[in-house]
Image (cartoon, rainbow, N blue to C red; front, side):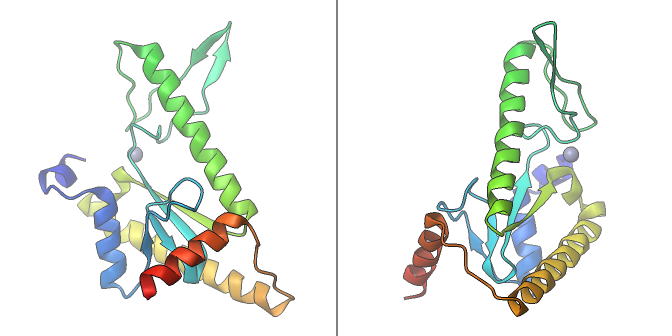
Length: 172
Ligand SMILES: [Zn+2]
């Protein structure tokens, strides 16, 4: 994490730069798509989320309720502060819940989600991480193409149409 911050490069910019330099095109922060993914790749029907390990509780097991108390364990890259612990536990577990809801909504509407964690973008992991992303994108594209050979109906959800309109507007 330190390495990334010392360069002053935000994690999602690292991802965008990699994708762009490898020929991928995308749209940013499409507000009409649930969860406002950092990167939207319509061609692959894929939403990419670049998540900060602390705020999104990377590696943290689903919070448990024990005797009316919310229990959450630290992970390697998400260490909950000791002061105000209860506040942080609530905040981070809410974020985790919201993330899951967003992924579910997207998936139910035929979108693929890719989650990239900040810690996976450290220089020594970056290439490997992005190769995995690329594999996933190819896989998503293939499944989309295969699905199209059976009668394919475009999801009609309002926000998808809105996303398309938004795209049309920026094109013209
Ligand atoms: Zn992490």
